[in-house]
Image (cartoon, rainbow, N blue to C red):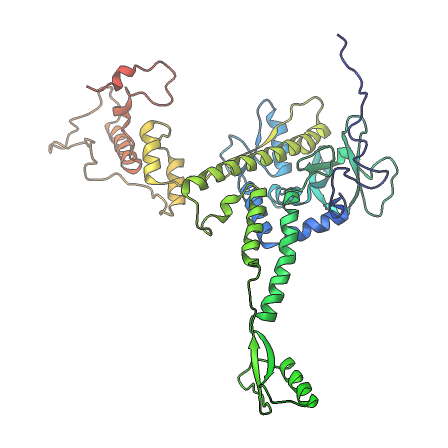
Length: 479
C-alpha cells in the first residue's frame, strides 16, 4: 500500500467565486457571506431576546479562568508569552502587578467572541522589537466582518490563506496573509466565513420583527376603538352634516377638555373590534421560545411559563455549559496556534509552545464555613497563613494583628509555671527552649480554633486524601 502524498480533489469549488464570498448551500440571499449578511446579523444581535442569549454565552466564557499552561516549555518562553498576552500562568498563584500596556486578554476575548453572531472574526497581529532584540506582541487589531470582502483559501487543502478588506483589489494573494492573522471561525463547514450562532434563529427573528410592528400598529389603531358618527333612523342628515360628522370623527382625540357638538339625531360612538383575531402575543412568545431552543438555552424561559421544574432546568443548563466549554476550547486552540505559536516562532526555533486553556465555565463555588470544614477535615486543605488571608479577604474580616504572648493558659497548652510554683513542669526533654515550644503549641491550637481542623498530634496516624501508600480499610469498619 502506497501512502497518499498529494490530493486529487478540492476542498469546496463552490465556496467562493472569483472575488466574492459565496456559500452554495445558503438558500437565503440576504445571508450570503459578506457585508450584507453581517448587517443582518448586526440587527439580530441587538434584538432583545437574541441579545440576552448572546450575553449568556459571552459573559460566561469571559468570566472563566483563562491561563497559560506551561507544561513542557522553558520558563523564559512561558514568561514572555504570558506577559505579551496578559495571561496568568497555570500553577502560579502569586498575583503580579497590573499591566497598563500591551495586549489585554479580556478585551481581546470580548472581541474574539464576535465570531459567534457573525460566524467569523479576524485580528491582525502587531509586534515591535525591544532593546534586547526580542519581538513582542503589542496589538491584536480588530478586522470586523463587515469590512471583509474576500476570504482566500487553498483550493486543494482548504487551508486558510488570508483576507482582503473592502476597497482593496487583489486577484490572487490576500491583502492580509494568514500568518499575520488570528482567524476565529464558528461551525466551519467548508467556508472560512463560518456559521453564525443566530443562523437557525433567522426565521423566528424575521417573523417576530414583522409581527411586533403589526401588533404595535393594531394596538395604536384599535386599543381605544374607531370613532364613528351614527344617525338615528329617520334623521335624514344633509350632505354637509355628513361631511362635518366625518371630519369630527377623524379629528377625535382623548383629552381633559375634549368635546364635540352634534346635530339632533347624531351620536359619536367608539367602535371596537368584533369577532376573533390572531393572538399576536402568544405567537411572539412561541417565536422567542424557538430562538432560545435554537441556541440551546430553553432554560431562559423557565419561571415565565406554567411548566418546568428544578430538575429540568439543571438538565438544560448542563448541556448548555458543555456547549460553552466547547466554544471556549475552540477559542483557546486558535489563540494557541495562531497567536502563541507565532510569538514563540518570532524569537526561538523548534521551541515547544505553551497552551492557552480555559476552565471553570459556569462554576460558582461559595466559600462557606461548612465547605472549609469539609475540606480541612478530609485533609484536602491544610491551615496556613495564605489560606487565612484569603478567608479574611473574602469575608471582609479585619486583618490579623501581631499577637503578644498571652498570660492566660491557651486551651490544651501547658504554659510555664502552670503548677503554681513558677517553674516549667512540662519542659521539653530534648533541652529546647520551653517558651518557644509553648508558643508553637499555642499557635497550633489557635489554628485549630480558627479553621476547625484537627490538631496535628491527633492526625498523625489518620489517613488523608494525600496518602500515597496503602490504606487499611479495616480502620473504618464499624465496631
